[in-house]
Length: 360
Ligand code: RUB
Image (cartoon, rainbow, N blue to C red; front, side):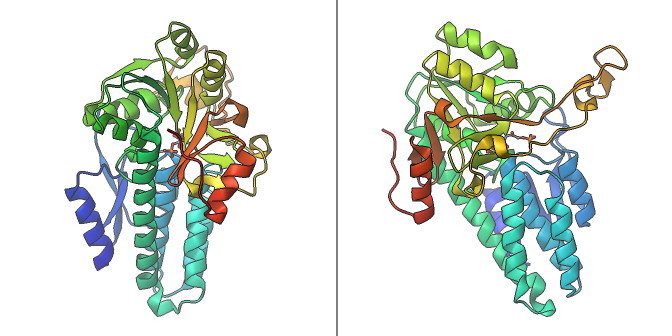
């Protein structure tokens, strides 16, 4: 696997923060449960172990689980001894792990299609080529959307972000939201970031804060319910979040809590941006509320790091994502530019690769 190993080596030398990679025909994966207190890397040699890591959210974030799907397919091809049925079974297992983030499904389907015409003997080599193309493409999207999105950020802005849409949720530079923020910071803009903690899994408190610290970007941790009041105080100028899926009409499906931030932003006249890539737009989904959102185990709400934090026997609910209607979104940042309303019309320019509207 010469090409993939040299790609990984090159990216490590460029100090990309990789959530997952491959070594000695095995997957290496940063356990995102433990960050930022511990940095532990697991070695996985079976697709079923990777599927479990995605389900348990040891690896998470829509971009990163798409990448995990790609590595999973390569691992499956490598372990298959030429038996394509094993790759088909692995694809099914990977796609069944988490239902909301569309990158996982699209990536696995793309790889499955690529293997259909291939003989068993060529399976691993063809998969490696295709996976490398996908990894390079994802990183290039990340860099380009960061450039476009940074144009929306002004010197002196304080930006609210929710959950974690950063390097470890993406390809290693800054994922979606943090690519925008990181690029603006690298351009010399004096910015500050509020990261909302993101109950119950605390991606904002743990992982966004970890990356902002690493990148040297000034930041402050807030709890999820504080954003409205801070907006009223004039302390927030922009909101930038990532995206698990964008519907064809521009509705955004993202980490639960996003909708509340968007409502507060609209009420206070603050631009709310969704950072995404063309790969995350689901043109088959007409509107966001048509999606079946993943509900996770109630124990993830009633317990924190294994400790019960409520009355024993109390029931809890955990819809993992919510839907932000398109009318609350000032712009959808993509690798083609920043798409403005009317999304139903303008998002489709991406599909046809016509020129899209870019913000200034
Ligand atoms: C992660 C989450 C992130 C998105 C967007 O959910 O909702 O905000 O994935 O980030 P989870 P990005 O932690 O449940 O996987 O667009 O960068 O993937």
